[in-house]
Image (tube, rainbow, N blue to C red; front, top):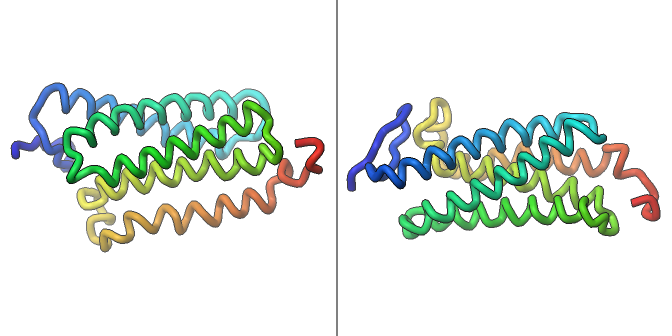
Length: 173
């Protein structure tokens, strides 16, 4: 199979259509990483947090759509990336809907859903690209799956336990 190498990362195609979809996928993914981090680190009030969270969500939808197309043409090699992408988007959708519709315990549900989608996004990135990245390529492949979760899950638990918004009485949620 012919491949294209960009910045040391092998892309398993020379098709202009495939490469264009990969380019869009990468731009959307980078936007997710940046806007997701800004949303998580911003004060939880109107303005920066919801604006970046919304951008994150819609770019993640784009990542999921482009990833679905890329995985479909290489299903045997990439089905696990489709599963990670579907779980990531499902978690973000769940977190967003909990907030938009003010479900009971919506704050906690939002805190679980949105960062879980971010962790799954990072896992998918490292599983797909870790073997080509400095430092990461020296690590065993299981690290690509585990390290984002080992770092992300305790941060999610910390937010659930210590964030002031989770301490509101149920009737205010």
